[in-house]
Length: 389
Image (tube, rainbow, N blue to C red):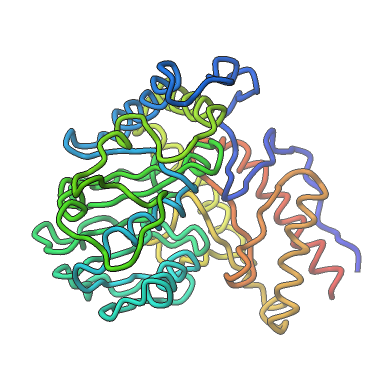
């Protein structure tokens, strides 16, 4: 059959909707990297100054408490989470929350690599979230704020106990700069520049509360720690990591790019405007989904629906009648059709998630581009459906 759906006339100005690395900020160009400290040691005076500027500006924009430490660490958000798990866990039991692939990955680390004896897994299927009321805060708790591969986020921080005995370790890589994180409830928070800031990959950000620092200085894991995980010297926190020195050599081009992103955030109104932009972007898709019978949100409950990594499922009876393999092929064809047209790149769902689409809606995305994208998704769906009818 032939696709009889009208071909849209309007195209997104920016077709980049990848969930990581994510779109650069509006107006970005290579020219913003001209002041990068290149050919110099990152420990030189100008190199340290640029690294320290990233820390200071991030602290100010996110509103971190004065007694919280923030540092740049290796290996993106993954490296930051691994540093926390390997350095802090084992002092007491731990509750592991998992409702998508990255949370499952942290469970694997705890169960098969660290081989902790006392851990609980509180999990849920894609599109849902575990019972947060069953979390035991006499124990450490590891969770993602926003599940990038499922489009499911925690509703808020009210479920986290203020008088907890354990530490909360939060993977917030697709939440930082898109949600107002309750810092007083978070003892370890990790993220990377490549998500909401639209920066470059390979560098992680690690935020520690005083309670996390106290754990580092009072507890020594029984397993050996690789150099890039070590945050203490002689039983005390290595403060240099949180003052602009880094454990290994960073890319000063990436640092300069992060500074440009932070400058842009500050110029548009800071953290409040970044949160507002993500909400507006999600609103575009919510309005479209409400008017479109063939598509729905993987996270059906609006209270736990991500405003950054928005995951969509196909609910059309034609699609539901396909077997699992055929559904996966059809969903990929929709994404491929959008890519061929150059209107929506990298919008296929995550490989471990149910077949569907995933569209990044963080603050570097313009809502007008999302408004231009949705008619193309309708068109691509109709094209794939008609070719398989």
